[in-house]
Image (tube, rainbow, N blue to C red; front, side, top):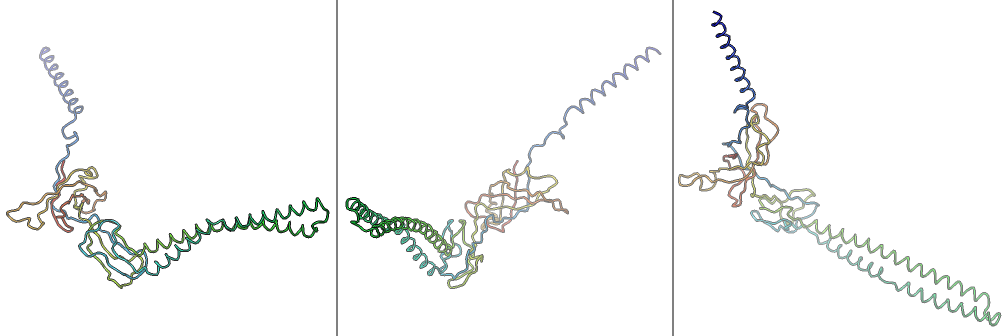
Length: 311
């Protein structure tokens, strides 16, 4: 009995040690479920194409349309002239401002008055010196009143020099003023030439020559198809901003000629650029945007397709 008891005790001890070792291995060794999962392919069957650039070009000022320089469907570069407003009166004002600036510049560069005043002062100063020398040799050769008149003339000549210098400084200041007036007139003329702030394709023009426009009124709409955006929804409870930057494929079968038996769906490439942090309260879905390269301009706004987020 004693031997059997010892044998059972040994078995119990061995079992306890086994369970302790097993528990330690389970708790200390990360399970497969606890390991960070590798990125997986995410397939989103419903996605829609939308524009990234959809720009309305507005008039900065009120005016009357003189010319429309583009037409719907035209491709324009940035800063291309779109609409020309009537600017004839402003161009005449610009000419007047340029002429006034030229006159002010000539006046500021001229020192004729100052040089004349200095020459006059030198002449009258010599007269005064000669009169004083004559009186030093012969007392009363020149009367005191005549000497005082000569001194007064010399003082007037000095003041004339100061006046000429002061007027030249005023002329220099007027040059800056007229230069600013020219720049203002040039800007007003430029404001009447409405240019494209972005490059792209003209898809809408809302005015015709002769029509008045108000400041801030949209006149031309310009879009760009490359790149373009694919919008869709994903489960926000499983995915978030970690998807930003991952490559995607956009598969579309709504292109002209695509979807027939003889033609496969067309694949476009891009990357995830935005995942909304806001979940829809009912579905738990969040918006996902992918920027898609579209160099052939085959994808257009409104088309539908499938987005595949690659690992």
